[in-house]
Image 1 (spheres, protein in one colour):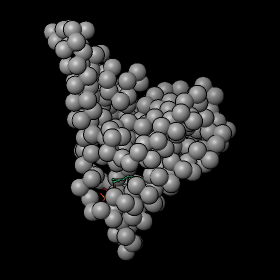
Image 2 (spheres, rainbow, N blue to C red):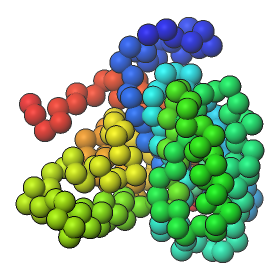
Image 3 (cartoon, helix red, strand yellow):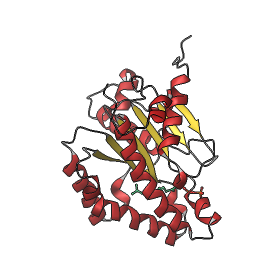
Image 4 (cartoon, rainbow, N blue to C red):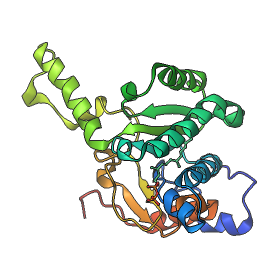
Length: 249
Ligand code: FPP
């Protein structure tokens, strides 16, 4: 593969560009603590995290990653204080309103995963508009998880299959993994090879529970707003040293 000429020699030596993970999931954690360390409101941490998000998506595309999934708002995040939720929604809305201009020329295809039903109609229209406006792009596929939970995603799929069983289109005893996958929000996509979680927490927090069955997990103590291209390259490099056996020997 052709390595973009924007990487330094040192960066080119960190990863093997011929053996990249296809799909990387990112749990963008640590915004609140980043803000607290600086005596700032949590919303400033999210604003800094949103900037990191845009930077890292660009870096991932330049590196040659095919799919990135970011956890932007979980089904559990509604339990946060109202003003923090409002600040997060404002950031997301800013991205929906202005992200396309900022992405111009980058060939990123955007797909939202999660249950959009909890958002206002105008917000949902903006989600659909962004997906539509980028649907023919053939560069990086960016899944943005919004009102997303791995368990509710599996329930969503199971409900669809039960509906089909009731209509007699499918028999319960014939259901396979492929059928469940067909109705996940990431249907048709490769599973994440690598899931990155910064901020010193070591858990998945309901992120890509089905798809992450064989993902390599990478943790670091860095808080998400401080996450850099170098951290991304290091995560990929560590991933490349792992021995993936998928349950075999
Ligand atoms: C977790 O950090 C982060 C979130 C719940 C929100 C992530 C959202 C962003 C980075 C903004 C995304 C914006 C766009 C445009 C996609 P935390 O608040 O739980 O941090 P803490 O554990 O330090 O409190």
